[in-house]
Image (tube, rainbow, N blue to C red; front, side):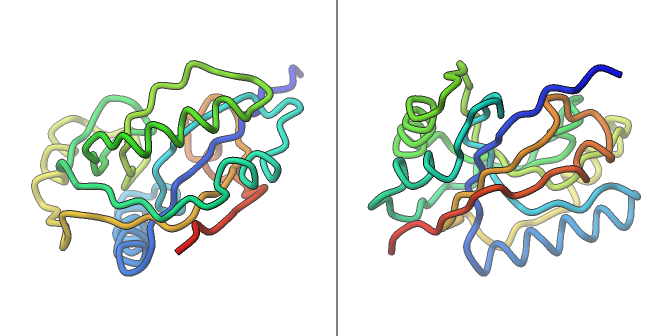
Length: 177
């Protein structure tokens, strides 16, 4: 059997109270649709796991970085498994710089295209159901503060529940206040 390629995903993680609200929403949707439960996050960079030292990368890149505040642009859905239903955030120049700094500090420098969003469910479902879900959810905030970054190891291809359930945190760091 061929060994599957592994990646390191760098996640921006929301602060309270948004973290709990997103986790509750993700948990409720996962229960309702028999989907995987996962930690609320915005992926800010992805690279090959081979020879990557995520702890060193986070220490180098996050030194003196403050928490981020991202503006909610809306709820949306797509045909992509990892963007079934998600909260889209407005572009943010400081976040784009962080993504670029992670790229520069990584061993394998991928051309990652930052699109700040926070997924609420990973599940194959028809467009009508995704539309109804998107229309049924009202977020209690228009801005979200993010105060931590985690490095996650995972399969390169995320196409089913079992792929999500293999995710493991390999490094994490809080942002300076």
